Amino acid sequence: MSPSEQPLMLKSFPRAILHVDGDAFFTSVEQALHPELRGRPVVSGRERGIIACASYEAKALGIRRGVALHEARRRCPELVVLPSDYETYSLFSKRMFAIMRQYSPAVEEYSIDEGFADLTGVRRVFRASYPQIAAMLQEQVRRELGITVSLGLAPSKSLAKIASDYRKPEGLTPVAGRHIHHFLPRVPLEDVWGFGKNTVELFRKHGLETAWDFVQRPERWAARMMGKAGREIWRELRGEAVCAVETEAKPRRCSISKCKTFTEPSADADEVRARLLRNLESAFIKLRRHRMKTREIAVFLRRRDYHERGWSVRLNRATGLTREAVPHVRAVFDQLFQPGTEYRATTVVLTRLEPDAHDQFELFDDPLQVERARRLTKAVDRVNARYGKHKVALGASLYLPKAPRNDREDPAWRKAHLLRGESARRRLALPRMDVAC
Image 1 (cartoon, rainbow, N blue to C red):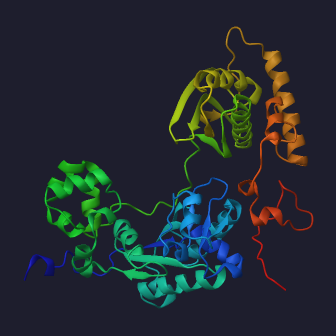
Image 2: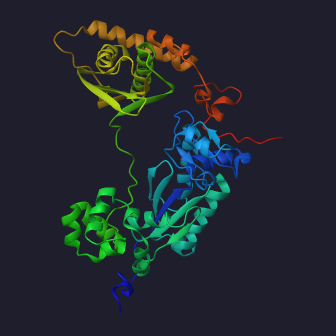
Image 3: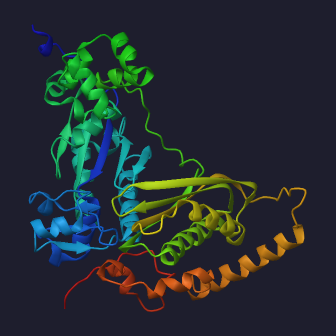
């Protein structure tokens, strides 16, 4: 018997790990809510000028994520370009994970459009095999949400993730333990979860081409090449469930970032500064909503050619007040901005976050002035919560309405079609379907 005919294990599913991956998730949601878009090439990301997600109809025409919209339109004049509606995508994501939890309480929300479920032991509940249970889940998602998902079923997370990508879209690929030795020779190294471009090139220099070639090497060789990660991947690919399905809530937020791409690149210092300060305001609004403070602020300016310069400033005292951060951000902007250079995006990142529990004042701080600033900030937040975000804002933002507008600034369909009683800031957590009468 040749090595490729020798099974790595005799059991089918010592663990039954299911990976659920939404097919072109963002555009699938759009097509589910707008039936007239089904069968047409659709992309999202109009607000950025770069494709965030492409439907399979668009992918068939060679249009992929990351392609500039002007290039995509040149290739496909009939392309439907939509702004990203992350609010609605999040609602569909929550419903997808809720369906997964109907089949197993052990569910890991890996990202907005993919997750893992540990189905081990649920066969007696559904009186069906693991592949049949996976097919039931897949059909329920299609029936209730109107989108498709691809599934991978295997004894480990790494194998399940590889399998879900094997037959896209709407595929179901079960890889039983006793069949791993038939599956891995079909998996190129670049498709292995955890192998980056440099790792693949390194392995090819050692004569490896497939995942099967990798697992045929000794475990100590994998550890020597990649350390602990290499050892874990080696064991996972051989069907050993080293990485557990993590059902715990996500850890406390480590940073908050706000980035805005301009509709048209600008070399105007006032406009670029206004965009940056608007990002700062938005970041601090989110910071206060999570009852956090920041001790470090990073600022980035991206030029028209996509080159980026950044700088960070560490504060003497953590703060959640926008006005305390403005002088620092202005100073950093003056250092980074180059007159005559066109910029296409600004970014603000808040790091070194901590709970907004109490203030630790420095020797020369004025506690009374800080308290006044806090009261003013709370008043501004209440006004903006009632009448809309940024209704009361920094004076520098008065320049923003003067900036030219185009279709890239149009809101997502759901935000432009409000239900009675909704506002731009307060909407029901319900997607809205566009049905022509």
